[in-house]
Image (cartoon, rainbow, N blue to C red; front, side, top):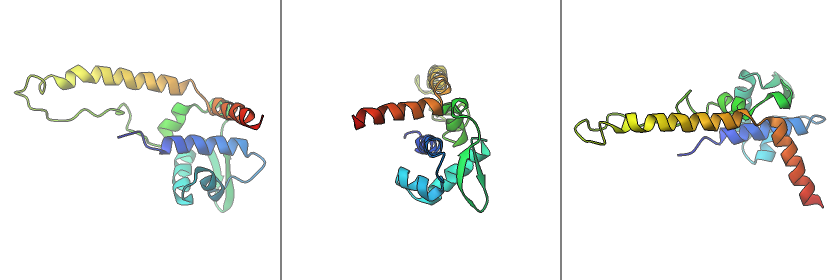
Length: 146
């Protein structure tokens, strides 16, 4: 299993909205860039709106960022798109056999390690913003044009 692609699509949407300030960032436009269905984009946009990351107006095509891109962390996006339940990136299987040496101890042995791994990942995401991603995209594009 992997983290839902809603996370990377959410980042894609926010970066493109930021770069397309002069244009209209409709779900159709965004879906074209992501190469997916506009319905999926609208679903993720609804999550981003609910989290206060974008603004959309009913009946008016397009979206804009609700905050400066430097104030939107990847952790904000991660939480907005419901990738996993709070503190549950890793699920430990339930009901291992209590008469087995591993079964009766596995949960207590791996839960602290998995919790530390999730916290480390969230710390990294917290320190990267949409602005950082947009700047990196710009740098990569400059390298391709030359």
